[in-house]
Length: 93
Image (cartoon, rainbow, N blue to C red; front, side):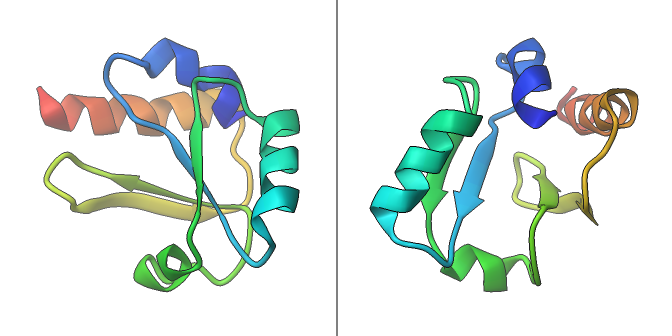
């Protein structure tokens, strides 16, 4: 769902998928299957600890001043995801 919504927020939200617990080649192949150019990705296990992520899927919204605005485990429907992203964007205005 994130990938499908990301293009509508490309001027106001930077999307990054953080992979982990795998090797680079396997992760890159899977990212190519799941993500378009609207969502960047990285392989960095330290991010899991930084944001206290215990498993996937998990999402964290971070403001421009590096404050955690929202976080959740599991997938969201499109309308709820957009509501949370709209709130994040409103903080920048």
